[in-house]
Length: 243
Image (cartoon, rainbow, N blue to C red; front, side):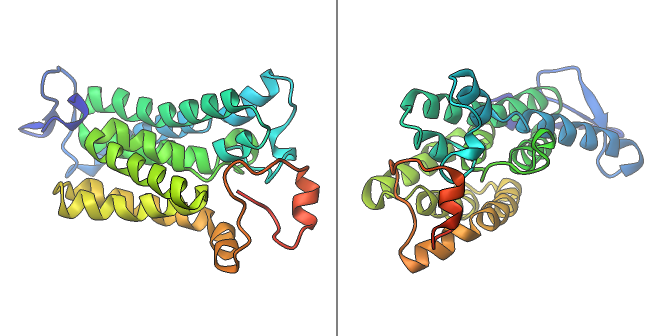
């Protein structure tokens, strides 16, 4: 995969294997920072696209933020009972992370691809179009991982599926997979720089799941496939907002 190709160094520049594009050596921050900022911004804008909100409105279901937990992610879209819409949300939220990584990686290499992936993840969590109130990020997390290193994507997806099948908690599955990913990247695959970034993404993902963690500890977390309720009803319940 070109996004993973090792850069070739010339004097003062990084040249991407198989391409003619170059950016200043990251050591020369005076010249490099616009490229990092552009990669971050490109990823952020892609990540900010709220697919859950778009597909539910197009299907005539109104604002997904007023259903179930009020979250724009796949799990809450599934609570509408429309599996096709949940699948479309999962695909859209995942592929926007993959696209950000592959486009930037094709042009400027892995280091820039990591920055674009971080931007896409931040865009999903804090989308500018929704007053910075976005989803919890696991689909985009997987999409970024797919673009950067597909063997680890397969393992992380398998961990999520296994945990979801056994326990029926989407949040627990995401937390477990995100905890496992940087550990496996570091010790099994020796992708050290990538592992560091996924530690950061994992911290953000866990922070966005803090309410879910509390409900899991109290035994009150909603299971996959639970029926939808208006968000006002969910907020008035003892559990508060769901996933």
